Length: 423
Image (cartoon, rainbow, N blue to C red; front, side, top):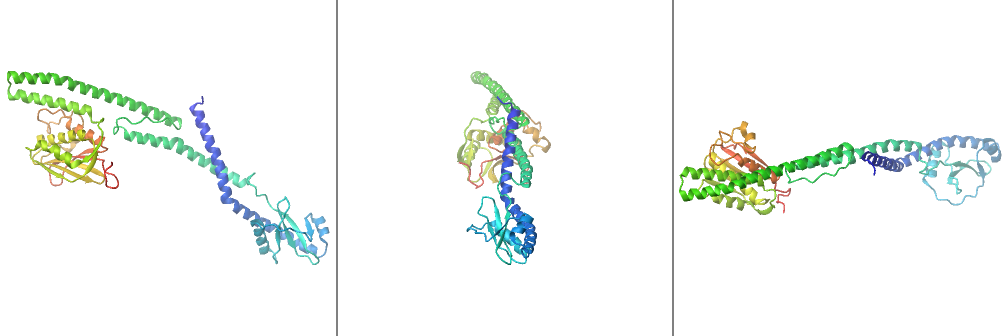
């Protein structure tokens, strides 16, 4: 079985080879014609001088003598078969026409060796000069193209390696970290990429497992305490009803029952509840009907939303209870939209929570002396509402409205980009 470092080196070598090959092919396609044109220009410059000297010699000596003395390949009255004209002989002819006083005829050779026949000016007969053409095969490649492909292939291979083995796994890790706390449990990350990235992924998976275990233990503890208290509370209520008790004893028992209910709500959290598409204004109106004897004003717009109705209802009722207990009438419950978010706000006319204590107020089991004074409260109301907002991809905000008072807002991520809510 290969080690992670060996597999990583093998993948990098594969990236390198593929990048070298792709760079060579691409450079051949992009620069091959330019190099070929440059070769024809250089060949035209060299042949122009040879043609001038050969034509001067042909005025005094026969072609055989010039061929023997110069080593050039000359032919007279050459029977040339019709050969399809190509780009290289056409470019070579254009170069010779620029450099000579006349424009010689250039024909491709029909032999196996790549070359052209160039007609020379001769006073007696037609004389042809043979010139070999440079090799145009892709292999072996041109040295310049090979050097450029090695350089560019190495750069591309390094970039691909960083993208696929480092950048992409780190992006997955970043997205997974952003989901921590918003989902019941993010899916474990696959251990891919460079060694350091694999170690980060393993530690992230271990962290998520520890967080889940801690959350399970906390929820089990809170639910167990609240559940164990329910039976004694029921027996006490029964005994007080039989024996008769003062109003204060009944109030204390109601407060204890309320605290137990808050524990159960906070332990449950609504994470297992399915989201349902429903008219949000009707849900809020139904919940507000429980407070028909209280000064509550509703400002709702029709809106379809995909929510967890039980969890959202508990959060909203907590906010209404807090507003009625610690704020001043009237209480305004408003349903609006803000950019791509659904906003449910509960506004009272009181002073609210001081700004320097608002972060503390959102923490579980935190009771502020200036904002908490009634019975039956254990500092979980805002914490439950904040958790429900997070389950809906949003957040809870404490605001000071421009016209006075204090507002607690649930911002829920329910709207799509088209303005329609997700189905």
